[in-house]
Length: 296
Image (cartoon, rainbow, N blue to C red; front, side, top):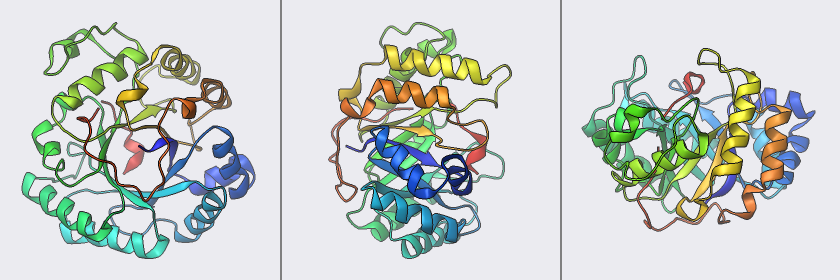
């Protein structure tokens, strides 16, 4: 439903890497991307409005769909909702992605609070798409809480950061009914798809790992190798609504080697292409482990 795209976390780093926002947008288009998810707020309010406005204008000039995303901490639901409202007003977004990671420091989500947040954000968005991004391997991260969002969102965007997963312990969790070779990127995405579909009913946009660091020994060379492993081994594109990446440019993210793999894989040819205003039907249950602490 959402095709191929990427998160953008640091607009100024994106400009720096490519030379201009216009060149960055063209690079995304050349990679077969049709959407960009731009960080538009943090827990306190609007994020880098001048840089983001220039970036979003360049993305739209290339015909890319632009969703905003932001860190939602559950500490102050009124403020969390206002962050979405203000982001929509500031950037005139095509859709919104809530980053809800309930087990991070200083996060206080409850079922009741998440229900209210999702209900009111759904009303703010109207027919524009509403997605929830969270941990990849859902059995480890309060699936009953995330299930609260299912009636309100159009899709889920689990952060399927494969590192050295799957491990043996993951194979016995609810929904893990397939065969999953250990320490294999494509296998881990398959596993996450299956365990998410066991819990939720909405489509899945897989967020793949386009960064290194964060885990001991997870260096650039290994991260590039594992991305190639995913590109060569994953074939369940008909079961997902899209594929995007964390994240497009910045410190320890999206190396030239990763860009080469993504370009050669032509993921966009295997994924559905839908305009940003389209709201997907609840076709299939959704996907999901791993999270980047950079998203706060």
